[in-house]
Length: 133
Image (cartoon, rainbow, N blue to C red; front, side, top):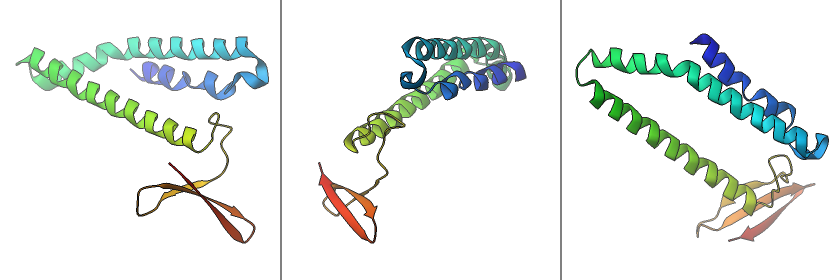
């Protein structure tokens, strides 16, 4: 199980080393993405038997299928919330004018009383506010 978790952790290294195609080219970036996906799949396959054994142990041999179903529901809701949160973050970044994770202007976003987004950039001693919808 430790090896599986280590492989899952190592799956993010290719993306950290090659964050975009601008520095090393599209082929290297695509290879890093594929390597990351392959390592995630390998780590998941290594952990899956331990994960399912834990569900059986927690079920104490009773209603095992019900426990599997509950486990999969909880995992599915977690994935749904994670994807929703990621979409919200990327939507906020797009609205802020960010082209990528590395090409984002340094601005802080706040909301005024009417719910409009206000970005503030500290320029010297003055603060510039821009209202966007």
